[in-house]
Length: 174
Image 1 (cartoon, rainbow, N blue to C red):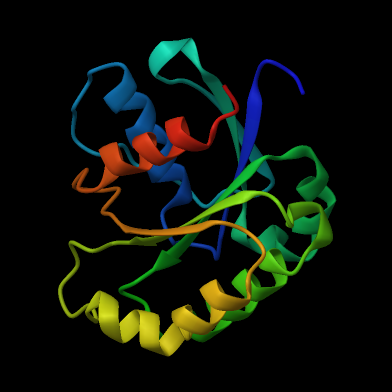
Image 2: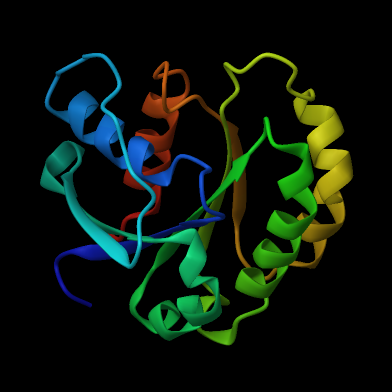
């Protein structure tokens, strides 16, 4: 294993992956600023984060439109953040299908997985209980081989982002 771990950041187009990465970088640099503008990622973004105790992680964001080729990146990662737009109910069922394919991929059978319900600051969102029910989260967690953590966040407001960093720190190989 290299000294730098790789975490895949996956999710449908528009769930907030790029904004999440920019905001995590800002928090680590103690720069709390207005959320930067972002564009949909076509391809992949690599972002190096230096966590506490000088742990380094490379987060590889894969654009939502790249779903069909996500598996070609699975063998090189030790953890996965799977983002869901909790304000987009029409996208939740397709996100669930994507998540199931990620969890069933053999190269990821031992990867630590964070399911991140983003956009919790938006009006008209379902409660986490409703989303988990729609996702059949209890069944997913029970049948998965991976350790799964579920968090809520708002990449725009910054709510929940410190918990995301804590999760990353906890899953990095010492």
